[in-house]
Image (cartoon, rainbow, N blue to C red; front, side, top):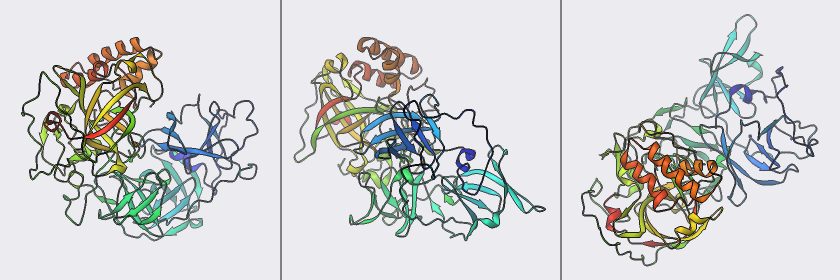
Length: 564
């Protein structure tokens, strides 16, 4: 999440600024005595306090109740409890009707913030270190960046007074009369970072790590070190030994244009070096970056509340294979496969699928496309539209049904990043007639229906039992690669057109369903294929949001293999 430079620098202990406080708000009645130890966001209705320094969530007594997950490149956060369940699906911290910004007062507060874990602060070039709500670097070329190397402003130097002034991105003075001699001078470590996609960055006493949304962890040169465990926060090596522990919400994100990044297009991976892509496309989190799989970084889950088959070929199977019509395919349960219960969410972000990257596919590539998702490409090492490249999800991977098979549908989906090695696996979801957050007639309508899904993607915040179904208009999630598609508005970031209709029609099932059909026809009027995929949610799934299901791993039917 990006914070304005002025807002960030206001907390610098060595800088005093005069400001007008006429717009400041105080906690609602009953909470007027609450004073945080550090700057915080206060949610009067819920009684939550969110600390931007480490994104922890507490009550007004200081008891930790959860964590806030920033949605990269936006002012939105997702609030989760200590078990990872969403408390607030999306919250704009700039919405003054819901969020009160409080100034911290260490001398007056009752609950002291936890002592942060020690980290090693460094940058590639010599710079002055300015410590405030986070670390800032002032470089010799008069550029000011955050700790990840993202430029947030510039500074000037007056040879007469020997003092400096920090300017924001628009060139307006933010902080004046700075004596750089009072700040620590750091010697650049010369380390450069090779990225294909943005990544969380951690440097501590144990090492220097880049964490991607696929949960792959590399060193600065792109060599795989191990994986990140989203549940425990542990970075583990290839032998599953814990190297260190980190909270993604505390870490800066290295972007392709960050100061110390010098190779945005590394060569295709070899056996000793992997070019990690990956955003988890549909969701929140990390995601993250982490924002982005059809994306990289970050979290995944466009919920409305918000192969292993070997292949020597470098291209997907042809879609010209015969399609079964007039009867449902025979679905065979996979011996020893996974099973359980869970729920289905939805997304479509247009990003290049996770399983289209060589290091994830195991030779069993999911197809990828150019030209508005219509032309297949075998440029497997090419970049995603979600990070400035030209590769995206193929619109041929929309969900579909088969003539004469009314109670079974077929789709592609994302699964938890923690599953790993899931490219090309298939699962049968049998809907229970209930919803995860609420149940209505639309959920009852699909009771007993089966959806067969094939995995093309992963999500950093997709939970066990959750399948994030690829449905046009289902919500772009953390990363939006659909700007070039010529479609209409995609609805809410998490939940898409259905979420729009639910709120617009006050969650009345029949009205919501009618609204969704109208919205699909309007938004995708110029793209018949995408419209067909959107209407799958209205017709086969009857507009049921986040339906509960029982699932079992199955052998992949040919009708899905043909489109994978």
